[in-house]
Length: 109
Image (cartoon, rainbow, N blue to C red):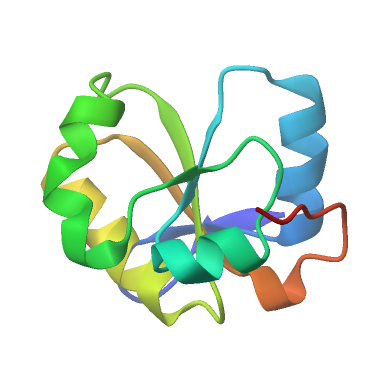
């Protein structure tokens, strides 16, 4: 399921994220890895805003009520990004962890 960790960051497992992404069409899937990593392998329909450019998130995701699932390679950058998004005022941010734990469809390019 999903819950809170010690830093009050909401988390969601890849399996539960996959199920919600299938049934809820308005979720933003945010990849915070580098553009090179994103091109190599990514989850379909995700958008890429590298962690070092996250200050630009409001240009791509202006709605602070938007549900956002954040992922990276292993979970460290997505955890940091989730904290930053919360500080920016986004209310429905979930750290999904790393793509290394995503056992569903991925794409390249």
